[in-house]
Length: 228
Image 1: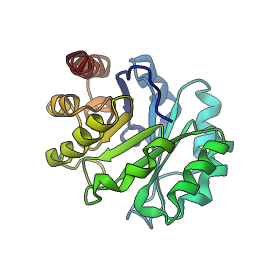
Image 2: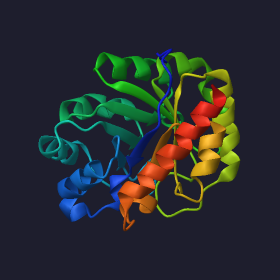
Image 3: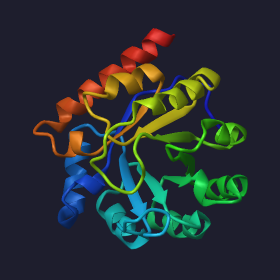
């Protein structure tokens, strides 16, 4: 489902790093500072050893933030179970982990039929060729640059080889990176070919999140121009 149109730089703050007691205001603040979308981490305590929030919170947030793109990072076992609840909650993109399902092709089509965009995530130890046969069904591939489940981990530079592989073989694919991405690591992500950047602490906890996102976007756009 990749478009033939040129890819564009997009910055999606991870709202898990925000003040969860005031999620709507925090989300709006990040959007006002220039976020292109919001990255919502859903963890079930099974696929990853942590718990966050589910569809009811997403639905409440959607009522307060009606127009923003919600990119759901579903770090859950049995991701098939949550497609319809997240659609009803107002999700725009449903990103499941390839490691969590035995029927990824069917899941891609179920997400598409529910009216959401399809994202496929890969943990660090999962070979990138695992998604070769699924790229045509996806709107975005997510390369994890930390082990999923907890924030604050160190960026794994060796994951950039996966990004380079995808960009070389799929020039118009949206490629997202998530984990430890900030101003010190954005250059590696941009040069490898990522165009969708999930950033937690580096943006959310910054004294000037607008400038951080502007600098990240500039890095990506410069890399895109250098490849044209």
